[in-house]
Length: 180
Image (tube, rainbow, N blue to C red; front, side, top):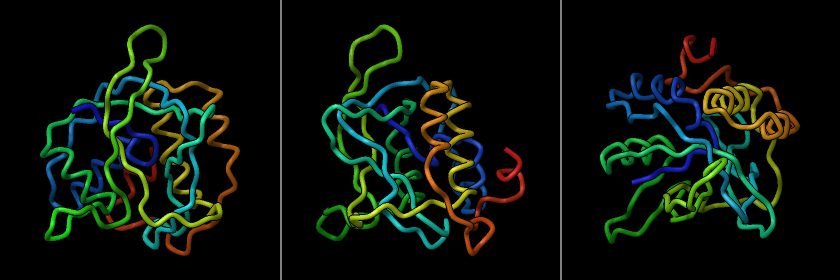
């Protein structure tokens, strides 16, 4: 299945660090293709204690776009990302946790037909912007660079206000991730 990454999961090295810390097999986040998700906007309405600030989400908003990358993942690789981002199923199979999976269509940069993909959308959205930590935004921006997203998108990411996290970095994001 195609997976659309737009937040910290754009940063393959940060995902690898989390997987090592938690003893999980690393999903194949190499060779991402830059794409555009039409009619959504990027926002930071979810608070994460471990990140020390707001974390990325997408909200339906006609006329807006979100840049990101798609990766072809197996279901078992997707389940690793489910755990990383806080997606769980209750006993009845209903999605609970911080994010849920949604189906979307993304447009490749340049030529190509729209591609069906899966991504995550928040379940407990606050109404207001919660500034992300500078560490979190740095990971997102580094992932955007690594996946060849446009300089206009990177400038947009850099325009968000950030805050100093109470914690230097969340568990599983060691010194290697900080040097990205």
